[in-house]
Image 1 (cartoon, rainbow, N blue to C red):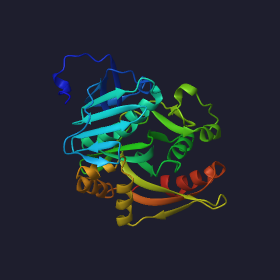
Image 2 (cartoon, rainbow, N blue to C red):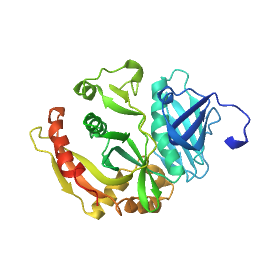
Image 3 (cartoon, rainbow, N blue to C red):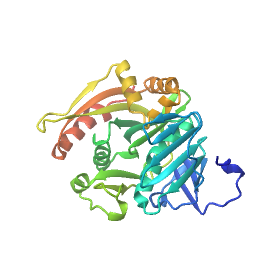
Image 4 (cartoon, rainbow, N blue to C red):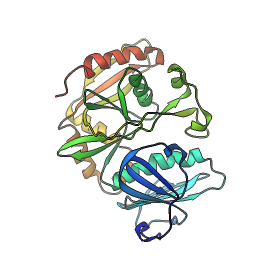
Length: 315
């Protein structure tokens, strides 16, 4: 098994920051070269030394093994990833794997696991700050979270997270740790925004999705005050609609939208996730936002949000 990274004398040539983490890495991570963060928690990223199995682990399909302190992910053709104790990541990389594919899992699933192992709550959400509080938009992949955040940014709202919205309890309130080095947008959305896709910013080698890098989101941790679940109306001519959600539905929806939620589920930590999700709604309100299919209706969605959500005082 790998040894404790704090006991090793090897030097990491790369230092990166993202959200609450300072990464001391033996590999270059191009996406993080200009990123920022508070860096109060140090994580060592090492090459090699990935175990073949984790003792007494729960299995998630054929690619994952999980305990409360360890995580092993095998992506054929890309890499094998091992995460331990919230402060160590190991990689065995396939020689021909595209760097973008390696980074996609490192900055996605592995980052989410680090958050869980450090007692934080990562949500599958993009979020913006308006009026000193944060509104999070939650939904499965393809729901339009990043596109909505990008369009709101064009109207002057600050993006504080994309894809992973990271929460931490602070004096009873759940606050959002800024993690917004980029937005991940499909080519169609980039064209809608008047942006040109850059090949070197492609998220995954086989996808038509690209990173649109953002200004430094700062370090202010604002309170999460609005939780908005996205739903698609297949009727392109339908009007966008907002509907308040009952508390029980909101908590259940938040648990479903926990990023890599299978990790705490298989590690026996569902009660902890329930408590954190319930704590969110001590200070936040929940809605379901039903949006018509098609980017040409985006302005009507933005108008609705600014009129009925952002221009109201958070209670």
